[in-house]
Length: 257
Image (tube, rainbow, N blue to C red; front, side):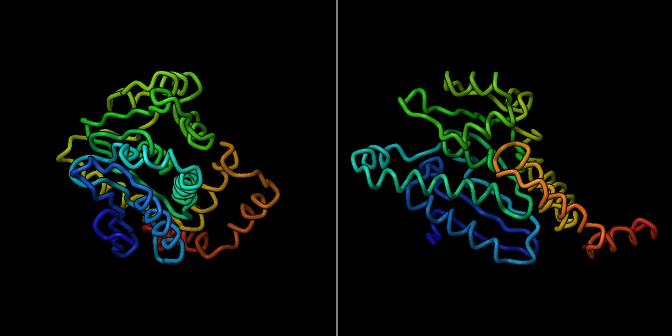
């Protein structure tokens, strides 16, 4: 993995994944998408993880695709197909992590960068955020999976406004439209991230995995298998996490999952 542009650090139960190309506003190259995919796939094998924090270096989340590289890729059909599939798989790997994920969003959050943020479970943002999804300005389309994420968060009407116009929206608008979970002052981001991390790492891993699957089935991003999900629901009552949660409730203490 390219340490210079995609940086991964694991600290206890939390993985930190940073897009680190600030001199290019964290524009994403094909190699960076591949590194992201490999990093995200690898995180599934780390048993203690409860949370992924995704952010960009230098006060910018990501300006999207590297346009210089994209103009070269467009002329090579095989490379273009490979690039599109890598982007799709990376975002899907992020969305399908068995634990929670939160994007810390500052500055530009555009195109594929916005797609990454929307693939996370939560988005914590600074007031200077500018979000935009611009394929219509380039004569391109957003993938069906990308469009589904926008519709699931913002609704069909707002999705049309974003996708058909390519307009930029500020943090307050994105929060109002449901695309951000919280907007705080830039100097308060670290403190709020600690708060979110404490909440998310204290939840039952079994519950988080199962609830994420239920939501994915209902929002259309995962094939519905309601009988299997019902079996998982019933299994929870005999799972060790419920035993600990019930004891903690009766003993009036925080559970230790």
